Image 1 (tube, rainbow, N blue to C red):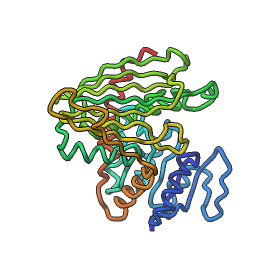
Image 2 (tube, rainbow, N blue to C red):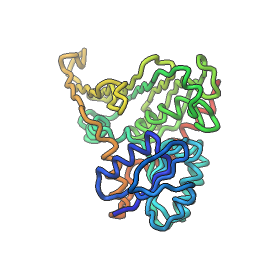
Image 3 (cartoon, one colour):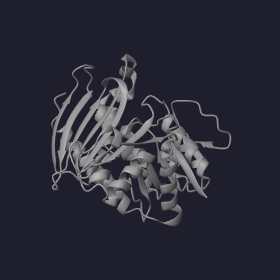
Image 4 (spheres, rainbow, N blue to C red):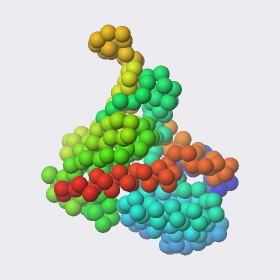
Length: 330
C-alpha cells in the first residue's frame, strides 16, 4: 500500500483522491490545502506543503496546485525522496523542466509523472492503436481545436494572471492538444504562431494559432481559444489511407459534448471517402483518471518506467511551448 500526500485539494486534488481510493493500492494519508476547509477525519491535515513532503510516512506526493508552484514543489518532493505526480503544466519553460530532470536524476529512481489525462481517454487510446497499426498508413497532417467560453469572473481567477499561471489559454488547454500531437506523431521541429489577447485584454493570451512541422513533413495546426463562446474539442488526423476524427470530450462538467470518434478508410476513386463510409464510435465513460492512476501506481509498486507523461515528454512539450510564446503579440 502506497501512502500518498496531496498538496492542493481543489477540483484536481479531489479527482486524484477519488482515483487513488478507487484503485485500492494507494491510501491518501495526508493533505495540505490552505484555501478551503477539508473534512476527512481519516486523513491528516498538514499546515504547510513542506511539512507534508518531509513526513517519512508518505511515499508519494501529488502536486495539484496553481501552476507557479509545480516547479518548486516537484523539486522539493524529489529531493525528499518521494515519488511525484504533478498536474500540468510541468513548469513555465523547457529550462525549468531541465532543472526538474536534474532533481529526478538524483532521486535514486523515484518516479515522476505529469497529469496529461487526455492521452488516457479511450478515444485517444483507440486512435493511437489505429495509427500504430499502420492500417491507415502514415500521418499526413493533423488539426486540433480546443476552446472554451469564459466570463468576467475569469478576471478573479489565478489563471488570468501570468505570474501564477505562466500563460493563458495555451497553458491551460492548448498544452493538452500539443501533447496529443506529440503523442500521435512524434516531435516537431518548426513552429510558427500568432499569440494574442485581442478581446479579454489580460496579461495572458486568449487565442493561439500555431502551425507545427516535423522532419517527416507532417504538419499540425492548433487553435486554442478563450473566445470560442462555447466549449469545443476537435482533433482531426488525416492519414494516407483514411482519417480519424474525434469530436467532443467526456469531462466532469459535460460541457464539451459526447466523445465521438469517426473513422473512414480510403476507397479506390474520388471521393476517396463519403459520409456513408464512416464508422462512428461513441464513448460513454471517462476512464482517463483511472487509467492514468493505474499507470502511476504500477510504476511505483512494480518499479516500471513511466511510459507516457514522463519528464522527457514534458521537455519536448515545453520546448514547443517556448517557441510559440516567443512569437507572442500579447
